[in-house]
Image (cartoon, rainbow, N blue to C red; front, side):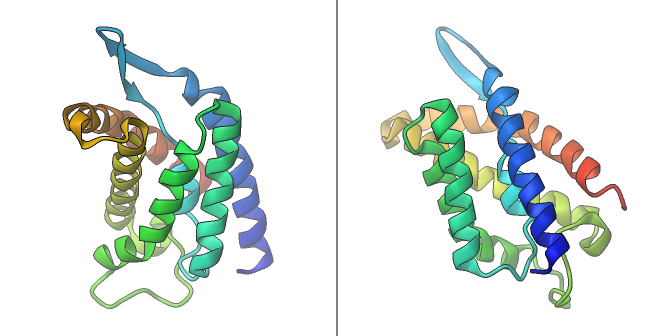
Length: 174
């Protein structure tokens, strides 16, 4: 990673951490005494890391961001576990949405480099994996499968909408 990529990633780390903790953790809607809709934006940090970032570094950064969110949210490792798993699965997700000709060696996960269709598919995959793992770890039982799926289905549209808006703010050169 070059110097500008490191600086951009560090800024994204801090901005997404602050946004998640102080804004989006305050958003939870539900009914019947249960919350079902949550907004997660911090997986965007993982999605926007350069494609050639070494896997151990991606996993370490994901763990640190997840642990930071956990620290402020008092969630005892839920965010760290879910984001670390998502970081581990990132190369597989990248292969799943790989362009027909493969990735350019200098490509970054931006709309300008890989197109909007690719970017939205990639963000959706990252977010779905993260949400499923997060809610599974939260309940820690497959017995609550209906709640896990319901929370994922309701949280996904709100989260992806905010993430797309943030992508357009972070990388407006589309």
